[in-house]
Amino acid sequence: MNVAGSTLLPREPIKSVCSAEVNPSAEEEHQPNPWKEATEEEWDDWRWQLRHRVTRAEPLKLILNLSPEEIEAIEASKGRMATAITPYFAKLMDRNDSNCPIRRQAIPTMAEFHLSPADLFDPCAEDENSPVHGLVHRYPDRVLLLVTDKCAVYCRYCTRRRMVGSSEKCITQEELDEAVAYIQATKKIRDVLISGGDPLLFEDDHLESILAKVRKVPHVEIIRIGTRVPVTLPQRITPSLTSMLKKYHPLWISIHFSHPKEITKEVRRACAMLAEAGIPLGSQTVLLRGINDRPVVMKRLMHELLKIRVRPYYIYQCDLAMGTEHFRTPIAVGINIIEKLRGHTTGYAVPSFVIDAPGGGGKIPVGPTYMISQDKGKMVLRNYQGKVFEYQEPRNNGS
Ligand SMILES: *Cc1c(COP(=O)(O)O)cnc(C)c1O
Ligand code: SF4
Image (cartoon, rainbow, N blue to C red; front, side):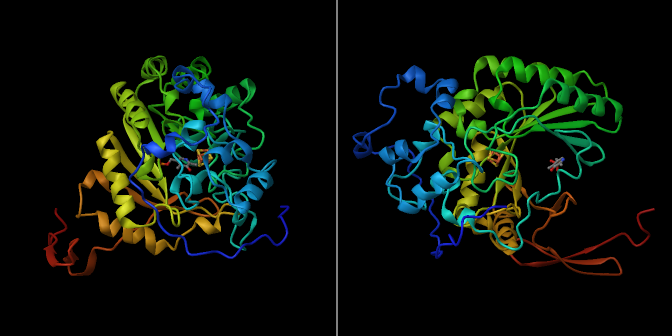
């Protein structure tokens, strides 16, 4: 891989930012706005948002005080994993603070061009577990169907950055038919997870044609969609989309959230519409250094998710994707977050913390240990407060 020279900049300790302030202050309303010509109707239209994605530093300079390093990195990201940010998501960024959690997720820094010896091109060996193009078959009973390389906003820590954000290709009709033929022929597959890129960037009828093909396979019990669009482009969730989706039940949706600041009134509305279409909603969150690695921030995110009827599903240890070392935390940080959640708050607010095994072993859960010892069926346990309890197992093995 072609790396931009000696661009590793001294890394300052990153301050965790968790500003609760989402609404622009009165002062910010008077700042220059590159989208001031947009009517309210246009702003609320997902196609307008997508057409006006920011890919260059110039329009961003109007709303953010970009550092020279950020400007350089935006230019350098062209042709690799591009910079693309919906106007909606850009407006959530803090004008002055380059450590703003929204800003750090979407605006590249030169640290991205530094490779660590641990970095992997395909961190979870998805390509090796791909029987046909676009399909990853790792677990016997379920498959991952990658239908597009395009996202509304490119997350700088993306685990699929090897494929996402450069060509914006989507699966061809022939490739889709081959993938569906594989699912059809593999009777053990009872769960199809449609992801990418972001499947919700397709027009309703295009997405429907994929759902309909998958739904036709008799042994497919559930369909899942993995998406970040409800967060980065909430305008995409429309009544026509939800009434189409609900024809393909049981359909589950996993939404990628990173920070409580992402939960705006637009996101609340989008999730309410999906929930009201009867779609069970789960969240997936990548643990990110300086963005959501403090237990208080993660706890607030989990609480906000429950309020919008999204059940926290996974927190991921950040994968070993190329140029993402600056986003990674020690694994102990994630374990400590679970320790601070379990027992201390609603059980529904506690996701599983998983490491997607490098090389392709699937998701491995890690967490605090509550079992202290086990001797002749006498279990010694500790609770969330550290108090010790004993449980005697049945002596006759329960028979
Ligand atoms: C994450 C993943 C799945 C789904 O895993 P669940 O634990 O069932 O959500 C399936 N296939 C692949 C390749 C995955 O990475
Ligand atoms: S939305 Fe998902 S696939 Fe797209 S850039 Fe972000 S992490 Fe990658």
